[in-house]
Amino acid sequence: MANDVDTKPKPSKDEGGILETIKVVVQALLIALVIRTLLFQPFNIPSGSLIPTLLIGDYLFVSKYTYGYSRYSIPFGPPVFSGRVWAAEPKRGDIAVFKLPSDNSTDYIKRVIGLPGDRIQMINGILNINGQPVKRERIEDYVTADNWGRSVPVIRYRETLPNGVTHEILEREGDTGTFDNTKLFVVPPGHFFMMGDNRDNSEDSRGAVGYVPFENFVGRAEIIFFSIDEGAAAWKIWEWPYTVRWNRIFSTIK
Image (cartoon, rainbow, N blue to C red; front, side, top):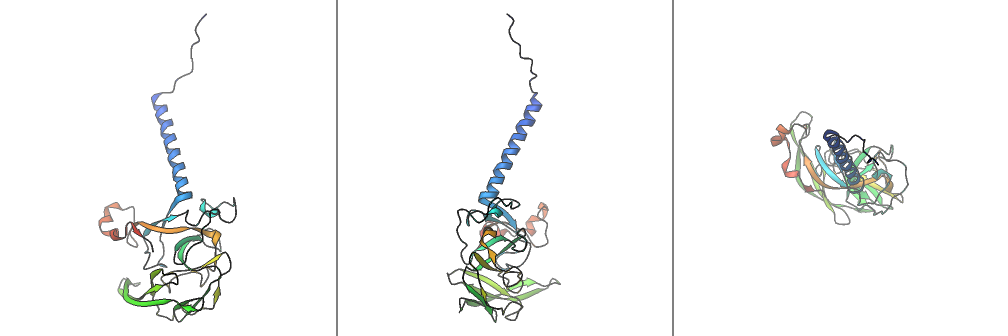
């Protein structure tokens, strides 16, 4: 009786190498997707609403697990479920990324100022929470550039929130800016009141942003992993020696 002969063509070394490369790439993409969805997501800062805390050109990691997970924890925000799982509410003073309530797709980053039930009001430039003015202390002016590239000083304060979180704010227009005197805001249940540290140059809950639903939170800003001068191109590696803000790399966000 004749022995069976295997007539299947064996893959060539080149074909085996290509298949192995595809396998490695797919595995790497899956790992990256899991990390981005469950652990950390990178963001960059495109506006100056959080100056002096965050600068245009900062690149940072946002922890996805800090507040639990909602549909917005998943790329493209598919409506697979509502609310949050393993939820932990944001704390006053956190800098958080959230989806803009008006379209549920645009990423915004601001500081958590008001918690559910809080009464928030700006009176002559001073933040009031639940009827009490928040402590602020005038410190050295912040120096920035105007539209013509000239160095100009901006009034800077150290503000201390009721829970002890201390951070710096700017008042470009003193205490007479557009949102330095507001109506009384009462934060609804399940929502938060968000503001930028650059008080006269921030679109936030005092205006069009409004109250932010807990479901819309993406995560908390944790650390700056890269920073480059405003207007510089990150891909121009040969310019890094004089465009990268080396002193900001790996600094924690407060």
